[in-house]
Length: 161
Figure 1 (tube, helix red, strand yellow):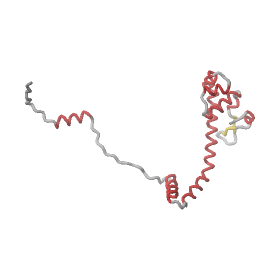
Figure 2 (cartoon, rainbow, N blue to C red; figure 1 turned 180 degrees about the horizontal axis):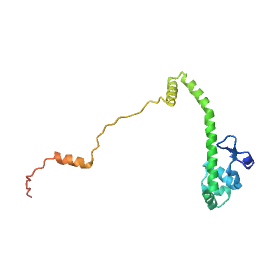
Figure 3 (cartoon, rainbow, N blue to C red; figure 1 turned 30 degrees about the horizontal axis):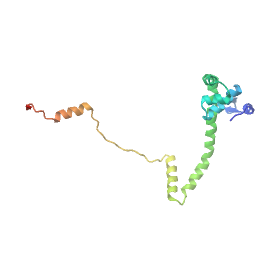
Figure 4 (cartoon, rainbow, N blue to C red; figure 1 turned 30 degrees about the vertical axis):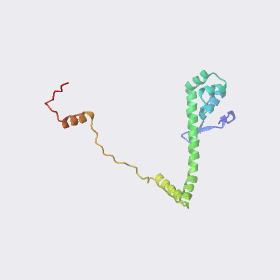
């Protein structure tokens, strides 16, 4: 979570690595900043956020309609995505090393699964295809077949009661 003290040091990378711009969340009022931080956790309803921030629920609803709030939320989500992406990239080598160790496991099932994972991720995944050949006929065609196959007897017997 970002605090007021951090607002002067937080930056979002721009397209040019040499240039950095301040996050727009820090141009908002402290309650609005806190609202965005708590909203981003996904743990609270808007009603609960209003209660926690000691504001009227309509205030929170109005904040959500404001372009500057929407922009700050989108920007914060982008920053979170960037941080998570960076962390995942940094774990790639560790994961590859672990997978490499699992391939040499004395337990065949573990070794086999590790080999499958390596091959799947390397683009050698087996194809799971089922070929189905089926003729589809319409209801009209079925009726026509039924009528053609039925022998119609022109001589009807009268049934007496």
